[in-house]
Length: 156
Image (cartoon, rainbow, N blue to C red; front, top):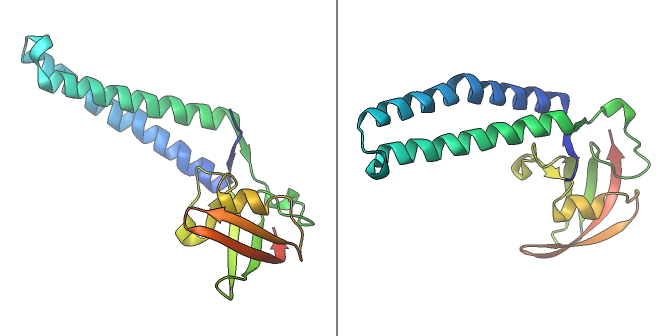
């Protein structure tokens, strides 16, 4: 299993989401199961089957969040080496294909949001940039084709 990288804020959000699942969603589905049981004839009870399926999904989500929180590595901005691209860095690059400057912050996949420039270390662009230095150019194969990025700056 690959490490899960989280910012302090991302960890807090995941903890809040886990709490919501445990204290709100889990009791709701338990109640649904109880109501569906009252309909009787469990082998042919669609409501019961649906509630049990929902319960399975919620429990799987809870288990996944618990594992992420137990094994996460917190991204500490004060400890980031900016001599090369690392997780937690903000990278300013020049997109040679679109003739424009772009900026990406490399974070873990749990918090990624490409529309905000937050890209996963596991994404094609994120993984291609990792370990590179200012002045280097990388060619990245993406789902929509190749792009070439020249690294202009690396910041924590």
